[in-house]
Length: 390
Ligand code: RFL
Ligand code: PHB
Image (tube, rainbow, N blue to C red; front, side):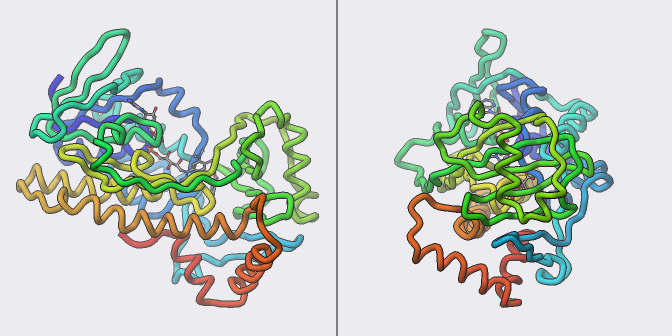
């Protein structure tokens, strides 16, 4: 098979790029290792920036997100049994975020790909990238027990953190930065009304917790757990019990519980690969960088990659202008590192670390006291949470 751009990975990054390129007249083929149902079954991002919504509009599939996504002008931080509000609107100069699930936006993207007749091959696993430093690279993939090849002009690695594309870059050409945290988030999705219309981030001596939502009838909750914990250790009852213990008493009292319709544990980890380009291979989204979910930055960082990359490819195909492609890695990484910093800061602020000394615990408390006593500190939090410009 022959195309201009071969996109590896059918998560939100790969699908959104496929849409943006297709609408600009650039031919592309997308390979996704799993089935569509499997991809849609992953419950991940819930909080998105308006920049993400703008890209969805540009891609011709932002209509449902605009209609059904909830605009949030603030969120809460709970500590010592009380709630304090972060007014995003006030402290970021009019900003807000959109609550719309990754499952829903991925569904919107798949449907748009279908409507436009885009080529999306499911259960097609890329196994090797060849000729990346030539003008005719290719991607070898396995589907239905057969080995096939896509010949192309550019390869996009949008295959997530565990994908193959980043690993195709020779070790000497890649710098990697990583931080693992000594805990994970146990997440539960339940068909219950959310305990609060706005998100509540909870700092508690038993560990962090988060009350989030997908709609007025669908709640998403998380609790910090040790890395050694398994899903089997957390029957629904135990989860709800532990969540209640970490919430302020009045919030716990109004929590509506129900059966978990999804339950998973995600280890917290930060990672950045530099550069995000090798020859004709360009990395985007989780394939190049991941953050702990505390600041809700992961998919939002993918969006800025896709913004820079789509424009760079369009300029190349329209005018043979290579400046966007040449500058892609540096531009994308400049924003990625700011999202790393913010995610690190929120994670350090709100979690219990197994080896935290009494001194560091007091620093965490002082940081929170400072935050809520300073308009400037709240401004720094708010402008990062609603998303830095790109
Ligand atoms: P994905 O979603 O991992 O998709 C990559 C796709 O590539 C496929 N693949 C391959 N395909 C072909 N051949 C191969 N060899 C392949 N290897 C892999 C995979 O099957 C998969 O379908 O990466 P992408 O598209 O870059 O999207 C990134 C986002 O998924 C991620 O950044 C966010 O979910 C992060 N995140 C959040 N981001 C936000 O902006 N706001 C949030 O509120 C937010 N909450 C979260 C999150 C992530 C979480 N977890 C579980 C890590 C909450 C959680 C709990
Ligand atoms: C979610 O709703 O899944 C979510 C929201 C905010 C975060 C992380 C996850 O910071």
